[in-house]
Image 1 (cartoon, one colour):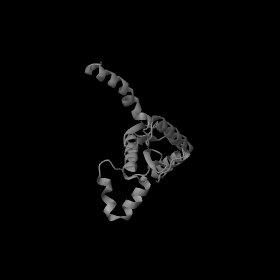
Image 2 (tube, helix red, strand yellow):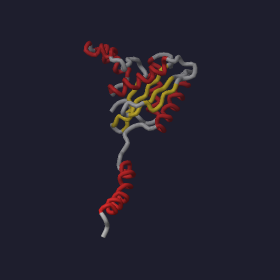
Image 3 (cartoon, one colour):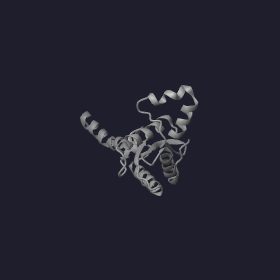
Image 4 (tube, one colour):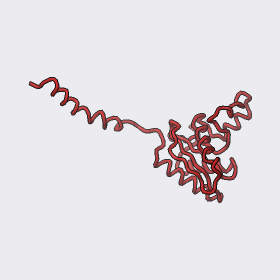
Length: 166
């Protein structure tokens, strides 16, 4: 007969691999990862080059965690934080910052959005949607104005078959 202690050890050893390895085998990730963030940065830089601009880039995952933060060559240091806050704003509101600005201007109840410390109502932040799921966000700054920042961000995510709307 097995002793109680030996039985517990055998049970633990047989179940342990299921506990450790089984968790990720059925979990479906609906968030950007490092590889995706790097590819987005590449697309952003390609689009910025077309406008003869260098930009700072921020990519956040679906939880709002920064995956990638790059300061553009010869771009002011404030643009790095601006790109992060644009990405955070887009993720948090699930809305491109360009659209959020328009809504805030049109609705007196929304005018105070810019008083929330982390939100930044500047163009260049876009949520990233894939198959109806919010997977992250992208913020671009330093492209010579908000319209350029928005265009660069939008085109970069479209190049990778993402959208900015659900």
